[in-house]
Length: 258
Length: 237
Image (cartoon, rainbow over all chains, first blue to last red; front, side, top):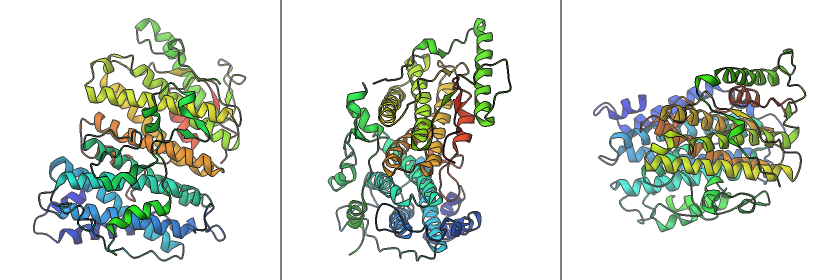
């Protein structure tokens, strides 16, 4: 609750600066707590399934975390947008995303790589969400889209990290936190915490791509509808689907200034 | 194709005083099972289980069987929840959550049973002991559900690195995020709407990382409820 204390102090310090300072603090903690350089044993740095190195994958993840962290920081910075319990929830999620940014930056640096720069974001998506920081419903709908995208993005990269067990485990540990976020935001908005078919419950058509393919029922070559009496819609809820890097970047690019 | 069934005769759930001896025997068995697979040997002559131990197997199949065991535990639990007093008196939202979770875990069981059987030997239906759970009590049901969901998340997070086939890793990834979605929903219900219970510091550390547990850690916890003794010695380290 330190974050809330900092943010809620009316005249203490600039709120954005407070969020950044907290992030740096957490980043230092991360560096001390985990010998991140130890993740990257020589000769094991190349990711398995694609031409991307582990650093490439982590930088891709970092871009998404930058987006989420800045989004929540700006939302919390917008007067009257987030209040009460909702503010507490978003503050915790924002805290996690900021921690992910610092963790990934440390992991990339620890490998000898260079963390990508934070892009300049436009969360109005060039005007499509003009009221993004003044309308709570719009803000939460886009938050849902970001979280569900994040879950799919990490899942899509897991195979590329198989050459390094420690990095893979850390990525999985972030992945499930994003899924907790997604479930919470979805339920706060009145949706189920899980994704039924390829249903886009954000109310925003541009988010259709976030849910495309979530209606998959064949897993490892098994048509689950043929081996289970569970309802088809509930079967689709039972498995979250991955998204490839380009599909994720296409979604994220809506919010990145050209 | 074999689909594990959880008949009520295999589930110890009678909470009447007359079943206490049975309960104690059963729970002792479960604890012994947990310590057995950890120790890897059986010194207790009173409990014959060495020949009854169910081996999870080796390699990727072993890891999948490990997941299958946990999914069986969850599926059996939610099947019992739907028959209990808490469910019948729960509000519409909580009933929908419980119905969905029962369906999801059953789908995971059906899927894993088939997928494992196509490449190796799937473990049989496990015997479970839920005598410590009061299925008429909201606190008992939600508290147990929270423990199971958080345990499942930590298990998959810890087991991903043990897999060698990226297709299996992806399948596990598809399941674990659903378990995390469950965990967040259950945690919020169990904390009566507390706005940070879904991912508080009990489960997410200062780096923003969720829990990850080794199979030995997970099975020691699950051993409270799984009566069938499991042999996890073949799992990759």
